[in-house]
Length: 231
Image 1 (tube, helix red, strand yellow):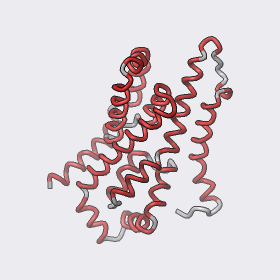
Image 2 (tube, helix red, strand yellow):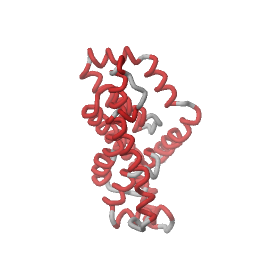
Image 3 (cartoon, one colour):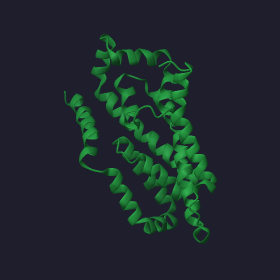
């Protein structure tokens, strides 16, 4: 009984904590107000900063805090495209796996009941079992549902660990890369200083990042419209 209550309390905490505390605004102001010190710390303690950022991303993902996009953007700004991308993918994957295991272990009885009873969740589970890899990649590639929901739902309906791990690791890469590139593009703008130009359309990295995000966001609409994808 205790094992069953723990994930329920955990889920409720995740869902309602954001209503009482503005995590995004808190982290944003904290970063902006201490940006100079942060950059100095990264320069002087580079390896330690890599570890700290990865752990921070892991914890924020495991707790489903609504700061993932900002941390991804910040990773691109501070560490650049390649290192920032690697850190975010590792941190997000490990955090998602921890959350998956917490929910899955606590909802074993729920999964068994889903298998016995008809209903929406059972239909979702049956749909996943038919083409598990395609389904999981789809909900990772396209921003149809919130990131925290995509992390939790597969565990509730009984998705196996290995497909979840692989599709999470590779599925978050496109969106992560686009935001990382935007963050890196902003770094280029800031570093111009004397030649600073407010016309972001002259910043190639910035534009490429925005373009990728736009394509990812709009592609499901075209797939549905032309009956290429049937949900």
